[in-house]
Length: 328
Image (cartoon, rainbow, N blue to C red; front, side, top):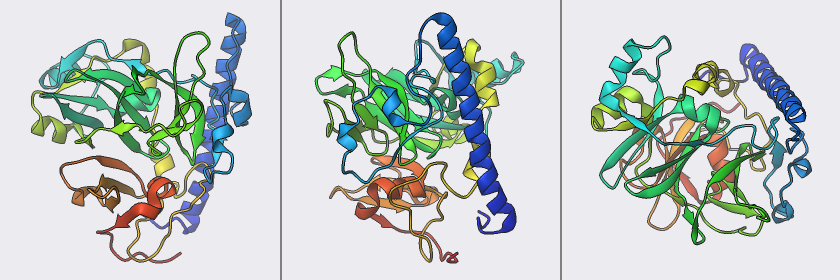
């Protein structure tokens, strides 16, 4: 990865977050106007966390930095999987469509559970961030935070009920904050994807259970290893937006879009700030952080960007497998 301190990268580092923020603001404005036309009003002004209608008392005295994402609450809608297609039929399906769904180099989140294998395309997760599904008889939430390139699959059976998550419109240390949805009178809690728990609200401190065996890899690799895999049937209404959404420029910007409370160290033997890593849970509850190519094949594995992992779990992680880095 090029050095973010060069003039070209420094300029990109400023330009990309500004451009993305502007896009988010325009999107939020459009969403708000749509709400006014329909008679409803979205919660959250895109900036001030207090405007989103959540109990934020759990954050008092904690080091995490809560920020408005630029979008209001529920601007992104989780996807509920109702039908699937076989992975082996993907090439034939693509050949009959004007816009291809998943091609060989596209990254997917894949998992096998109860003898069933399924892949969820990252292009779909980019515009939903949460997919509610059932695999091997287990209700799961496939979650993805593009700002951290972090993919985690959780068991949705939490605190005696099966949770359906919503997108809060807030981020904690630049990472996705979810909330648990409920009926009238329900007080939601906020759940941190990388924090692996509820961080505010009635269920604050309740842990989420990340599933083992999750992979984030190119479709061709997943399909070759799991020829019986299925994929959610594409949503025609979202297809144009799915293809138009990409975070590639942001990942090359050299720094996270929002402030984090514990910046990642740099230097010899450390990943670069926006480098992709995989954290693998160890038997003693600590984490081993390695390059993706060196990550253990089994166990609870969480792929993400180094800055994000360090912000949440840096004090109980061991870093291994990264070569010498030049100190900026």
